[in-house]
Length: 63
Length: 135
Image 1 (cartoon, rainbow over the protein chains, first blue to last red):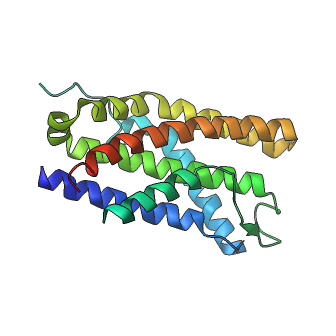
Image 2: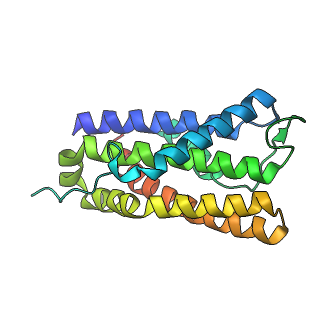
Image 3: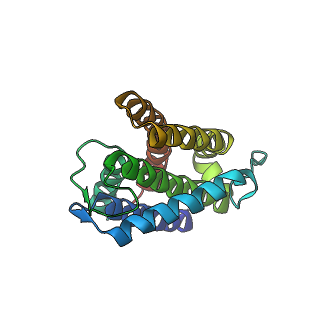
């Protein structure tokens, strides 16, 4: 149980980092715009094979 | 830690929407100043990362999580079953908006992103309920 909680906190920390990056205000530089575009294109490529990606396979419920 | 998590999750929910965005684009960038296009791609990136993290977290800790709350796997499986279609729809609407940047196409794009936002926040609600239960 403690392990799951710790892993949960790690997940939350990751999400916070992602969200805080997204939430920054101010002007987005041309370089950052290019990074967002590159990330978007990489994600689209991943979506094509999403069902084969780690963690995305639907498996039976535990007994 | 609990406060930090709550604030972080508020960031998550807020960051997935267009509303209240104060960012501007430096002229000459790849988006040609199109704020809606930039925010759409940025929102898709953010949702994609979050959902990917969530389903992997559920898989890596399935046995423990299943004993605690069966709804976590059910929500992860719902995401697994539908996310591809959500993101493909968002991509199609993003392409439509890029080619024909009308207010109507912008509105349709935002509605689809709102659906992805709803799925993401529902998953986060499950996660929050569980992870903070004893945190």
